[in-house]
Image (cartoon, rainbow, N blue to C red; front, top):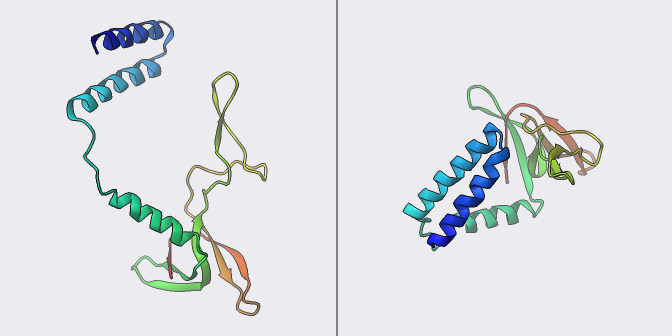
Length: 150
């Protein structure tokens, strides 16, 4: 263990020769974090209840359930937008990874398949509303906050 600690210290010292201030802070923060993990340890998670819950949520979202979409007014009141399919997608959801690593190791932005760069965050939601006449889903963009219920 002592040899590993000496090796890690030597490696960090060599890496520090050509560092900028962000890299130095990151290295120091990682060392502090490692000290905390060594001192405290990881939580004794045995039931994985939240992981099971997330699995259930993802599986339900994958079922294209019949839903109802409402906007929420400033007083907390619900106003029906449409009968919908699924739970809606936040506007900033991206189909592809928003970043990629170049051959030089730099992280750069990457466009979506449509050639546009989606924002990292946005207020709107894409909802698949059922057309009342055809009962086929149409894409609707909703800007206010929404609630989607099964």
